[in-house]
Image (cartoon, rainbow, N blue to C red; front, side):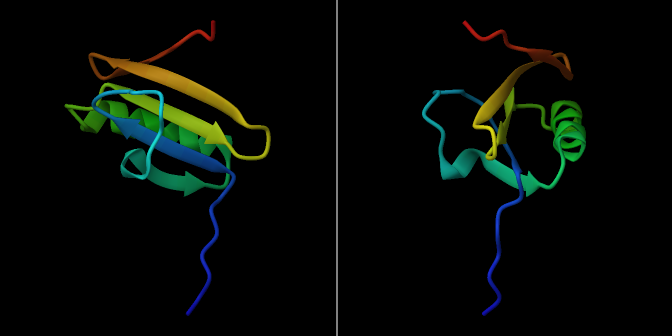
Length: 79
């Protein structure tokens, strides 16, 4: 069996953001931030019932969270 590894940037999205994370919200892992950002834009355009998208950088433990409003991404500010 071939081992599969996660890339650096993990993309999560869903209808409700419960801030607890979860495997069901995981979409894909990508090698670059640019690729992850492109995927979030595609999710915003094409997944009607999705209300949030998140990019997690597993190297720096940084998370970028977006709300989806009318098919556009709005970055949430960290408090």
